[in-house]
Length: 371
Image 1 (cartoon, rainbow, N blue to C red):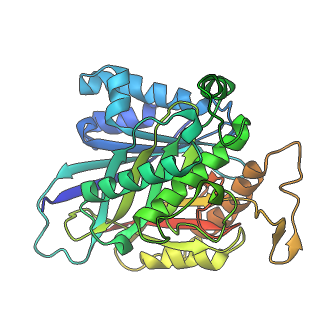
Image 2: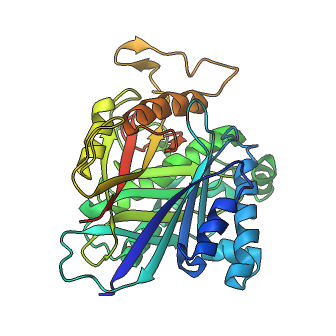
């Protein structure tokens, strides 16, 4: 089995088009552009259908990396997995997290499993396939391929599966209708949830968290079916799923480690603490961590509980016609996590359909180890 070393670099951004931090690290030699496998980002858009900050950020990164890689910007986008999550409500701070991977020898004195990353893509979907069994099945195949790419054979070593998935537009809905097909919904905004949910169920199938016999009608209805590690984000800029698997592997020579827990609801501070503790980190500003442990980032999902309550008390996130519920949820969960992690530069994505229990979601933590 090949041995690889994964690097993780969190870089603050001044705007969706700001690539100066990344270029500085490349210029100093800290990052070899040829080793970049994936870039996850938080951009200050609305996170909705018309959030063009995501596409803007990807375009800026591709244009900046193209001359460094000797490729066209389009070729860069095909080579590197870009997942931009719009919406930095509340105290969330815009940033990108760059994941690199290179061949490396594992030191003889290195113990335990270390961070590994793998990537795969599905085929392009037809509009009528979004939010349905075809998307679930193809996503499950891609997750397994990404696990193999990461050198992870045991599903229990997978701690976070990030997916960028498509959404419907009026043009795409009309194209399906012209061929005699109906889409899962005609609402562009509603389609984001269907696509996220089906993609998450694909993760659950791949990892054996649920049975493979998931039906079209289970999406956004059977909330007892979910993955404990899936994080899916919809965007207008693609028609296939990009799958990134993050976990720990004995074949990794990385100085990083990842762990996770599952939030049962939007105020589950205990789960965030559990996730931090899983990689040897303590909670809050100035709290001592284990020797040789340094916080890098939190990756989490957030959503407004679909039953309209949090621990028996009514919430109004689903009834606000001025601000979408995903924006409320990102702000609430982002504030909770920021307070415990002592930083607002955390990756919190809204819309957690079938990603953790209803109203909750997975939360993963990456730490750097020097021991």
